Image 1: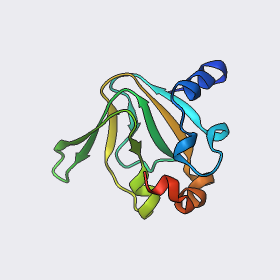
Image 2 (image 1 turned 90 degrees about the horizontal axis):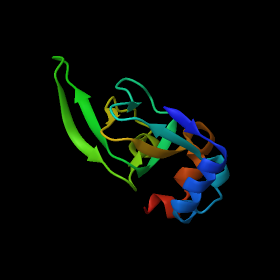
Image 3 (image 1 turned 30 degrees about the vertical axis):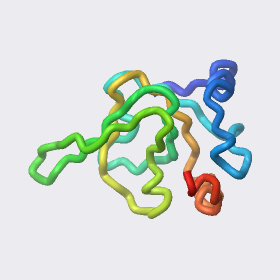
Image 4 (image 1 turned 180 degrees about the horizontal axis):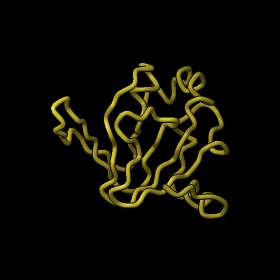
Length: 126
């Protein structure tokens, strides 16, 4: 994973605005993460530190069963969230999320914004 900063970060925020999805100013706190193909956004067994919003690319959700076999259970595309179930339910899911193409995500630190996100009706209605 590569963290994108400075002018390139600003360009992403201009091309893919996100402020209209929230009732509070969040853009200054958003990180932009770039993942290469086949890179893990969230590994199984890892609790996410961020709420992700995919702006470019695609990813796959996997689950590994007790017998060691894994299954592809869903796809994630641009303009979809990753980690919203953990935010809303405070339940930790053990699914892994792996990119299938180069993927760019906005990353919102959960520890800092959990309370605000859970009280933001504009975000919750998305």
